[in-house]
Image 1 (spheres, helix red, strand yellow):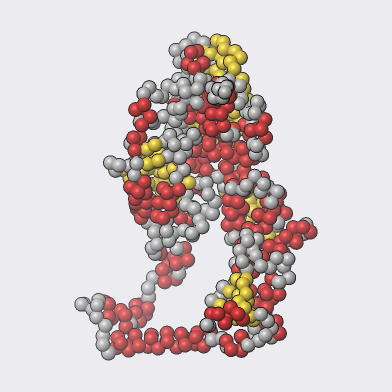
Image 2: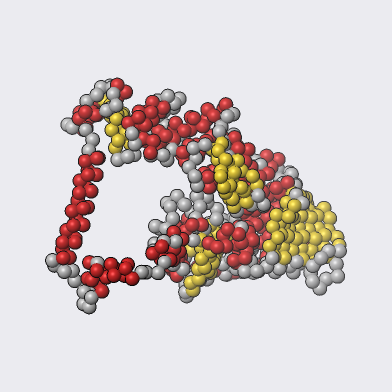
Length: 608
């Protein structure tokens, strides 16, 4: 029998490694920028063409390389970061495996120019598909410039699976944002197709957040700083009003390396309990500094997933630090009348007290009981009990009236064989459901879901007919987004226009909303756009064709929150009639049940 096991060639081995490390242009951006940081650069430029498919270039002013090091840097497992096995457990640099440049060179055309500070000339190296085409001396600036051209030119299948330019560039901006946040002391620039996207001067974390994410975040930042023997936590969290319905504005860094960790994210979200809505996501940029021996960063090729020696301890420290930050800056459920403009406008606050008002106050029951000596915990048994008794009788009377108003004649409702025959065939259940009789038994209808189905089919009909109405806003609203989200919203503007939105770009990452779909409650436009951006951010590869359905479903969900329309019998009957005029009345656009039937047999079984 012939031998069947053989060693792979270096070329194929590098292409396999590239499949793990270089998944898209953004992967090359991450690796090259991290190498520039490890080289001690104080200025880094990222130049992109065609969303990275044509060119990814990183230029730095770091330490540069000798001709021999420049050639060795493209070999597999060649690294300047590790000398023995113990170095793996004390890693503080970014790239350390020595696979990035070899992987990139296996699937792209690479040109490197590099020069050390004390060298007279630099080195130019050209590599295509792991093959060295040319290496020669050249004139260049101190530092390193690496150009990655035509990514996946020799792996057509991989290139075919790259997404649209908008999606790929958004991933590049994601990587650029994370690295720039982690290193505010370094100046960064980003160019795309010849246009400058970011110009970030070296500074502190607060100015870096403002420069990257927009001015709107500056006034909502709350500093966090907790230092212990086990863990140091620094950075910023957002005030509750800065929370959004879109994910992506949450950044964890462990020893200056961006990580993803759902467990630690939960620790932050739990600290906001009672301050933000359940579906909202708080903003945070938090740096965790721990002994590298307690953190394993080598569990994933992209090094964005890590393992901790003690997860529960990290959770407890982080949760406490965020709570302390919120409490320290008075961001907690409390009353602060000095911040309420309406209260400040009251005449009782602005105008001085008159002598007559003072005399009337001093005659009052509460003033006498609480202003007298040793009276703070004492209520006069004669006059005091009478006052409380009067209050009780007033409250009791109001409760009785409310109870009478809420009484429903159940027998007259349930005896009808056909709900549509008379106005007594519908019963409201806790304000969230309707119960009506049908020939086979009882039907229970979820009001909000029914409205959602009705609105969806109404909007779909308007979309197909091309006559979606729009109402102009009296005061146009500005809507500022992060750079990544602004890219997505810009792509979706034609679809949003077709469902009734009138939105125009205003500046680099800001939009002006001048018109909204008819029926959308005032102030809801931001929530709708947040949800649309979040859907686009996590859409599946085939979702672009279904984007109109996603937009219509989000709009239907927002428009279905009108409970006033079904307070009266006429509104309830109209809801049921419209629901069963729909092409699919049984389910919402997201697939949730709208109604259920309880047959006579079901009721017999319930009652034994």
